[in-house]
Image (cartoon, rainbow, N blue to C red):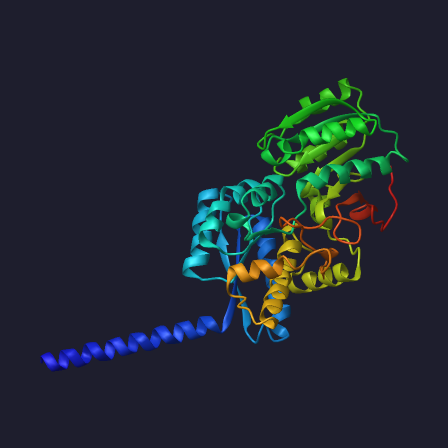
Amino acid sequence: MKRLALIAILICALLTLGCSQKTNETTAEVIKIGVVGPMEMKFGEAMVHGAQLAVDEINAEGGIDGKKLVIVQADGKLKPDVTGKELRRLAYDENVNVIIGGFSSGIVIANMDTIAEIKKVWIVECASPTVTKKIAEDYESYKYIFRLEANSSTFVPSLVEGMNHIREKIPIKRVVIVRDQAKWVEDIDEQLKDLLTKNGYEVVDDIAIPPQKTDFDDVFTKVKNEKADAIVAMIAHGDAVDFVKQWKDSVKIPLIGLILPAVDPNFWNETNGKCDKLIVLAPSSQVPIPINENMKKFLENYKNRYGHLPEAYSAYESYEAVYVFKKAYEMAKANGEDPNNSDVLVKYIEKINAQNPIQGVRGKIAFTKYHDIVVAKGYIVNLLVQWQNGKMVAVYPIETGELVW
């Protein structure tokens, strides 16, 4: 009996070993791309859609190094602690090759130490200058983080430059700033006021609005009392739909600024058309306007695949992030280095720089020394667009139509 029991144990052990080897072989046959974000929100959904579109295109051409790509989703629920747990799961349980997504600056900053721990490349979607600052201060810990979204420090110069272009047609002198009560704006508010003043504008008020605010009557009363010529808005997390509706009903002056929900194609319907003549900054040209042939093709393919245009700006970055990873992986492989090693992958993503950019859908993609995306003419630009009769028109620095008022 003892002999039979021993044989049975031996057989089970061999079977287990065989299953383990098969699992490892199966894992080795694919390249895993983790996508982390708020999956219950359109931003998370757009991340997955953009990444999946790129994966489908690459797989249709044979994959990378003969291996198919697969997406592994992780719902961070817009919470730092949950995102941290999901990042660890992607690294330790799923053993993904790369992670993309993130969405919120607060979420990313809170988990930079998580990335230092797990040592996985994370191509993030967020805007705060703090991210780049921390990479510069402690490169070895945070070198795994790259950003495909424009650093928010570029938003203000782009916006004011665009306003200078606008005031050639619309007289603007006195302005009221209306902004999110949030970290991403706190980082750039003083810069905005300073640059507006230096360019001849008079900032007559600076109003911070909490994210739960839905009634803006007091805001527009202040605007009227100050006899402002325009409102400069910085809204990403607040109630942009109600704000824009009430703007249209309350005042008859231009509303210009960074209003992230307003670059989504459904914003016209959400505001019942009251966003007409609204002028917004689209960071990194993440907007459904065919500003070049690559963007035109991307928008057509996205609509064919999902039945609609990108539901949020995060789709553009996640799509391009897959191609950034592909380029770095292939460069490492061609040079005889292991692209499954995160330190190697970092080295080759860093080679995608101003001297060696790749073509994305929004323009040429290149990274700075501390892993920001290059924002400049000929690369990716912060685009000023205007809603006109249900469509978005690019008005500066790329023009697909004329500014109207």
